[in-house]
Amino acid sequence: MSATIAKTNVIYAMSPHNPPVQTLQDGDTAVFVTCDCFEDQITREDQDFGGIDWDRINPATGPVYIEGAEPGDLLAVHIEHIQLADQGVMTTGPNLGVMGPSLERNVVRMVPVRDGKAVFADFELPINPMIGVIGTAPAEEDISCGTPGPHGGNMDCKRITEGAHLILPVNVKGALFALGDLHAAMGDGEVGVCGVEIAGAVTVSFRVLKDKRWPVPMVMDNERVMTIASHEDLDLAAEAAVYHMAEFLAEELGMDRGEAALLMTAAGQLAICQVVDPKKTVRMELPRWILERKGFRW
Ligand code: CA
Ligand code: CA
Image (cartoon, rainbow, N blue to C red; front, side):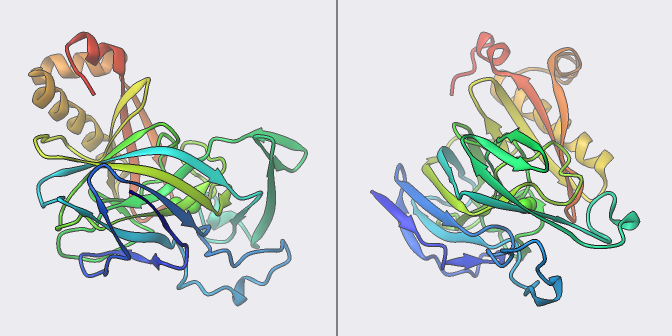
């Protein structure tokens, strides 16, 4: 089945208590229509920040219930297509982002997106469409859509893009999956507190994995296998991403820790996803061909 989830169905926290807006089967495809992270409230560069409803930030479209997904399973989400609106927005200001303490006023830029380019200042920047907020419900607590964690959430990872497979935990029956916060372009770090924030629509298909014990969230694309970890402390997020990859290598390929450490130090790329959310997010990337040479199949 293919369903469309309208952007009127939004949540502001990933929660086991959110009622599902749609039930899908294992293997189904769905289109999630999404607002931008300001719920499309910013339309002009001279807009008064005071007029924005700051309770309506980082809406995620959903959640959907995946039939057959049980706690302990994993949910593989294949991002088949990302369609962007024709204009995005960027904002920063006092106390926002890395430079927030040094900024004296809010800055808003509307950013037209056309022909694969985001038009910013005098530049036409190549776009790299990606999904900022994407996840499943935690087992018990509510986690704001502005915060990343083991359930996914606001990871702001540029590898979560068209063609990639994101692997998430299933913590509650049906998984309760949602996504939002598209970026037309974003660099690693997201240092100014935003990407080129934009509305759009994302086509994804779902597969429930019953027999995998992987340290999620993970991302697989044609080039790489990646572990993602988030923590209030950037150092600890980095350590966790590395340990998660070692766990994956042990679980999937039977590799011992010393060998895993040497493989990662020689061929792994440790990269910062973002440093501006309540928890910072780091990923460890390994080339996929190395794992396939060892027998990994996906
Ligand atoms: Ca975000
Ligand atoms: Ca964002």
